[in-house]
Length: 201
Image 1: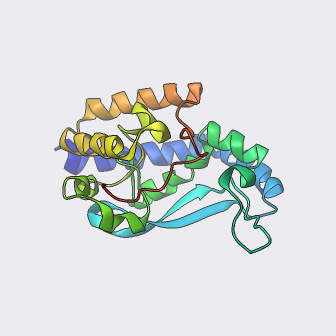
Image 2: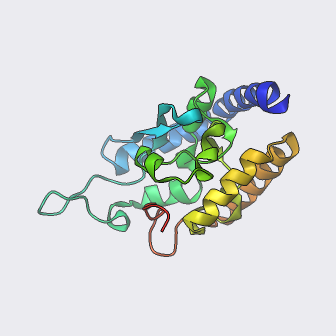
């Protein structure tokens, strides 16, 4: 009952309310990023959703598109602006995804939507993460976020899918707030984001 009916309604109401309350923060972020990124403030990328259906995720762009002499993008840490670092650290870059939740592409809580190129790399067990809509935050995020190794991260995702409940979602939301205030797990040990998943070896 919760998974099929209550959770989608809960997502819609919370996302719409969140967008309304967060409007001042969204506007301030837009202004600051417009200056820091010279007008390029949106990060739009195709990601797989429930059952692997592709949708376009919306986030704030925290890195510039600076390239080296050969035309290749500079390393992430070289392209991350001061404004972008603050917005990433406070998770403000995730706020636009509330639009995805209102549209029904995502949920407030669920496995994070990853890259389309990973779809062919998952084991049968790991594919279960696509049995539900992806989330803005999830069980893996409150258990380490980008510091968790891929194998462990997928295990958290599958565990969530198999144990979805109202109280688990509430617990994850509470822990997410704590993580955001502590700014924990934003970067992995070797990157400002998360290293690419290259399959199960």
